[in-house]
Amino acid sequence: MTFRSRGAAVGLGLALLSGPAWAAPSATPRATTVHKAIVAPLPLGPGTARDLYSPQARRLVRSYLRLQLLELRKAELERVRAVIEGKLGVDSLFSPPATQAGNRAAGR
Image (cartoon, rainbow, N blue to C red):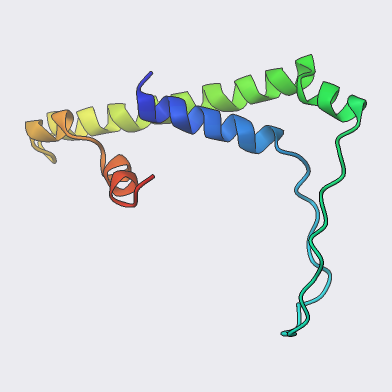
């Protein structure tokens, strides 16, 4: 596993374990000059922290990570096939794929 894919796997795991994503604003916010007070988030209850590391949650993250690795392998095999078919040069096997090169240029 490369450093980049390991980082992507950790990022995916954190995104899955970060919490519910169903909260959405009910109305379009208006432009105001009144500053809202900074409110600290509520502390997590003991049940919530326990749920993050439950066997079911860990199994779900493991499945997502396994799926991501399979997709990366498939993309790499498609690059090799393109080289064999002559659509890409042999040098492209030794350079990062276009998606990784784009991520590096963006500073990710």
